[in-house]
Image 1 (cartoon, rainbow, N blue to C red):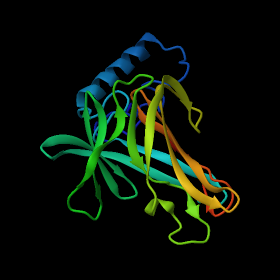
Image 2 (image 1 turned 90 degrees about the vertical axis):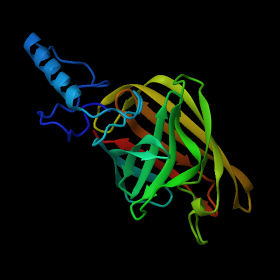
Image 3 (image 1 turned 90 degrees about the horizontal axis):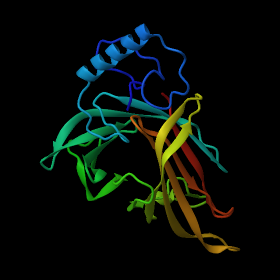
Image 4 (image 1 turned 180 degrees about the vertical axis):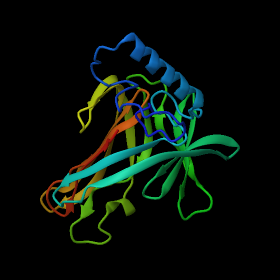
Length: 261
């Protein structure tokens, strides 16, 4: 995560949103004095920054925050949302130091980072006093960070709902195995504010659910598709989830979450 994140740790003047890191687009001509001042500011920022618990594709620095604009498209309209994820103080879990990323919906994710990649090993809701360990660590990103690297994780449908039955959400009753693959290591992402970010890992996950969609189609293999973009020095900048179903007993849609730098 670059200095485009909100700085909460040093008494330095705020840097321009696109003043550091990658994906800032063409630079205007910079004088030698301005260059020296920028270098000095960067050095001071580095000196007072906390250690990075993550890696170059998914930095996890204490105190840094990302806001995501979330929108839904589908047959049944849903109100847009905003998610905020904040890296809080590292903690010790099962005798190892782990990064903790807190979601504004009230869940903290405990992340283990090593040369093999990044795994989620536990979660804790805001009403819990202690974290709950995952039955098995869940990969977030797996090394080596190159095209073709694959892994699997369990998933549930985020968006598919029953039209006339309860509970409406299938996430309470259905699970699937999602296969993830790094499809690109030099992708570019253009966000809603017009900023471009690169290089980025593009990671795609695919799973299928065999669902009874309607009397005509009967049982149908419904694809669940996730796309994630992790940009160097910045982390997760965009996320998409696509769950489209034939018109009938069920409704689906597409969720898109974009970082608002």
